Length: 264
Length: 264
Image (cartoon, rainbow over all chains, first blue to last red):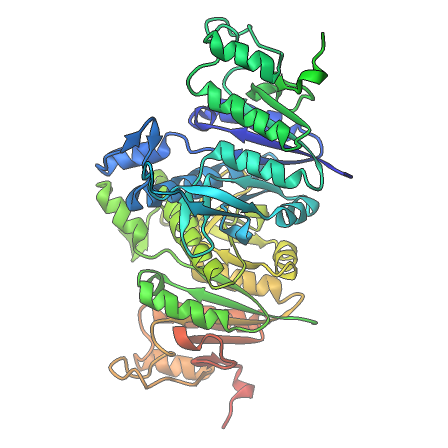
């Protein structure tokens, strides 16, 4: 493993806030070595759907992607958000290149089974073309992935950005040492949501169970924790949940570690 | 000049019609050797603007791009249209990669002077990064350009697709032999608009003047003719205006030639 690659994921809370995005990009700029970004959707798709008078259909907190919702997702995620981030990066001297899964056939997916729940045009990732990503990185290009993939049969599909980040990380880890950082508005996973300094430094599977049982990890945090451990199990060297200003640091926010690595 | 590159431009009339686009892509698939596509905007931006109740402001037949119109242009051109074309190409086995000018800093532009007419967020091309395009082509990737560029200062700009095609062609012609084909709904430039078979095979600057004076070339055709000769003067090997089904042919539709090349 000759190279190390940092894979950073940002979500809607950062994308929706110009100041936070600016602060994040400055920290991203300071990451040394090979790196890439995966961004989520943010509010723009919902805002456009509302302005167009479309009903946003949610099941269990997940958006149902009908044909028109897919078009708006592609417009906002692959178009507006991706190109705005790429152009802001270029302004900072970061030679970014925006990608959907269709571009260079970099991420193929299949439409999710319609049973038990039909989420519509949502793709579950099948394959990541790690060779293309390595090629771009070796040309000093910084890939910027939006949460849109394709079926290779001409169908674009809405795809969860956390899933893209972990799938890309797993694929890249076959040839390189990969660090995966999920970046959000707090400086790490908090023990007490009312105390932003109560950052949990390290989480093992055992301590995660404890935090889930005691209600410290709840709601949207649980799938993030599960994703982090899945990534670790899949061979990713280092997984973190951290704040926007610390993404360039070696060991920011909350680190997910195997139990036997735990510092006592 | 070791390689030959075909640069194909398609406009709104093809993009707006699923059947024409399908026919075009099959002909594009049959082009041998290195190739790339530049696409225009089509009706989607206007349709979305209308649905959002925005006024489309035109001066002399040109759209004025205010901030909100720019956002919709980026969404539809770089998002919806570009990714739909790329995913359709991938389905045909064409390894396409969609690009705005911001991606890989491939096309930089400056915002057009506000005098005599303020067209808003419209970019005039300053530089094409031909090295990146060569790199992508050498990786067997097919670049697909949308009509959006950037200022390198964080500003995306709406840019005419014909201008992108000719600027890319000129930049690539420094290292390669370039063929430029403007593809549209007729099989060439017509001598008589009521007779779709009345294709003018060859146009020289001298015959173009004649056709303009006699009213055969009028309205939107005149800037296309001017662009074609500018490209020829800039060193592009061969310039054509042709139909969607013949784009893979060696010498399709109407060819623009220097007077001394004219077949008598």
